[in-house]
Length: 338
Image (cartoon, rainbow, N blue to C red):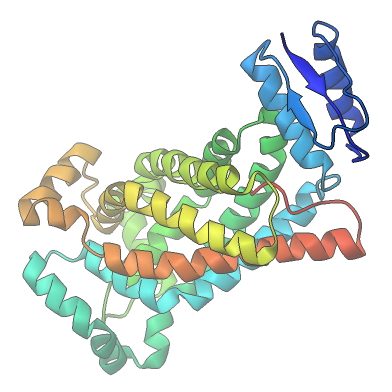
């Protein structure tokens, strides 16, 4: 028989929403109060429906830290965290993009990876390591602002961090996709002139406006898998409650898991972005296998993981720090959610 046992002098605080949802369920269940000498709180609620359980859990998480910041405030926090992370890790991302789009065989690519920093420095100088970063930052502002704000607001409504992350990923990455494509083409060329206007003109001449969305379906699918996995793992490990330092650490772990799982899809979409003949997803996959087998699909993975760790730490740590400051000085918003 399901029951809720309360004992001791500990206080249990419920938000109005969580309390209402709980009472509506307890109307069908036995409610037993233990004597005062029982010093533990033991709550066991029968699962009348999985959906109501998830909703109550979500409400309990959100009630412990106050109302969420407005969408505009959350967008600004996510945008700042994304821009900071993108700039800090731009050199590693530059190297990885060159490796993913290169047609060299695996042995040559491995040798090139070890010397790539030197090659870029010789051909373009120190600032060459940040080539294409302006587009990267512009894209990060749009995508991370939308991603974190949307995920935060959807997680409470859906009661699932993974589902909210998947939907937020599509909303964030697809609209800003042309910036991603242009950045890949600029950063993938070493030593060659590649201004934004020149690359944009080249892409438009190859296939019109639709060419700016070459590889977008792979990006949409990848966003669902990657962000769904990442925020699902993050939510499972934190249960919506964590400090900025804790958010940074858990964000790194969640991003490494999601990145390793979804990396082959990222290589395929980068190759599609680099090509001007608009190959399909499966044909690109077969082309990559022909170039170097399975290792070709994972080319650049070590650099990607090396980049993801600090990027995720900055993104999640900064976002949750800004949420904490917002709650302290503005009011509303906790550390829960994405």
